Amino acid sequence: MHSPRQHADDPAPAYEVHVFCCVNQRPATHRRGCCASKGAQALADYMCRRGMVTLAQRAIRINVSGCLNMCEHGPAMVIYPEGVWYRYETEQDIAEILDRHVKRGERVQRLMIRDFSRVHR
Figure 1 (cartoon, rainbow, N blue to C red):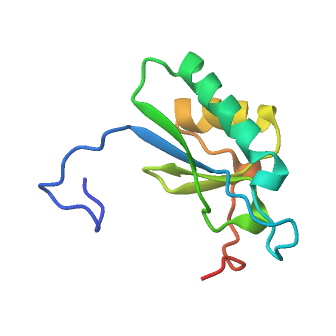
Figure 2: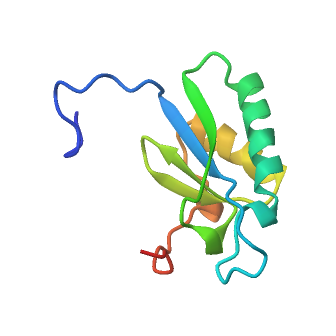
């Protein structure tokens, strides 16, 4: 089944799951803050390493990214193809997201970002 944005002749996705982890850095005085100041790079590095070990046989890609515009929630990530957004603070949060969402297709309700009202548009 295709989503409304997909076309029948689109190529198959390169990955079954594609994760983007914001590691954007802003000045310490910026009113919205940034993911980098909340330890995002170290957590994203951990996610990449753990993903390579635990999900090596699957077509999964974990990338760091620039600003995902979820600064107030950060560190933040988005997982495609579902487009589910998460906030995370610890390696345990990362392990849970990898195990439950990426590996088993479940959602980690306690870490999901649901309020997009503060997203800067």
